[in-house]
Length: 388
Ligand SMILES: Cc1ncc(COP(=O)(O)O)c(C=O)c1O
Image (cartoon, rainbow, N blue to C red):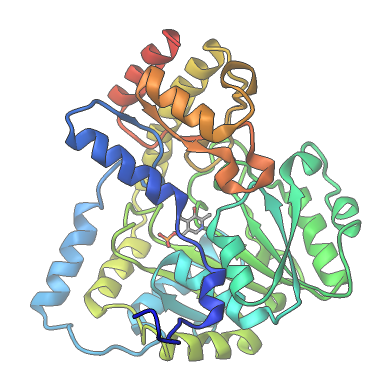
């Protein structure tokens, strides 16, 4: 095969593989050898998909809801999303402004492909969820990173953003609550970002993956600010709120100028989400039981226990107001190289984590640990930390 000129398209080399998947594979290998690993490296809800959601899918299959659906989504799901956004996210899209996608990752991919041309600059806070940088690069976009630390305790985020804006800036990506830090942007901070976006005529891509996981403060959607719904593409997923990571379903909300290209991207790629899955999603989103509040209570117990354990072990670990990740500073206890720190922690305590450097340069010196696991595993991790 050496004398062939076959090669993949150049742009594909702009995409990377996931370091987190590499770490997870390593953990699974250790476990298959019978080693005990305390798995805090993941990014999945610890609970299982609720039974009523599973039942809705079974019912849809039994009712032969197994054919092509409209590629933008089945009407009952679009209606349940429309109602939910009005009630909880405090803006009111029309049904035509909603599209069902194969999870948040797919929605974000479509959002960046719709808005970013080669040479355009895309601002986002760092450390960031890793695929974002690849998705921006795949469009030929240029990431412009703003450290989360730069805006800590500031209501006026705009002053910081003004220093990095250029005539090539086109998009700002906002993820609150954030993966990997668990940071939640306050209403005042988001208002300030909205004013900045309007002043520079930017698009906002708002990643709402962890909207239901806020413990301190409130979740505010970017599109709910006056003048923002026309320039915001909001991307939601059922992965975290309903423990549906494997179902691959989410939705995006945008006005016509952006929705039309997103529709074309979906039509020409996945051509929609599996029909029975959409019926299950409609049941999940229509649920008005206290399930989400109960889920938050469970996460909160886990967060508080692990935060205390880490601080007692000498890590500097703030209590994150949202999501299900801790992002402790490990420099004093394990050194500044987060890959080495991850290895050290694994070797000494059997705790698997993710090096902060995976989430960009601002993550160095930190580890990401998920508290989305059983109380038993967290208790064991806290005991193991005492022996460090
Ligand atoms: C910040 C953030 N956005 C989006 C997603 C996408 O999730 P999914 O593709 O499972 O919907 C994730 C998943 O971990 C995430 O952490």
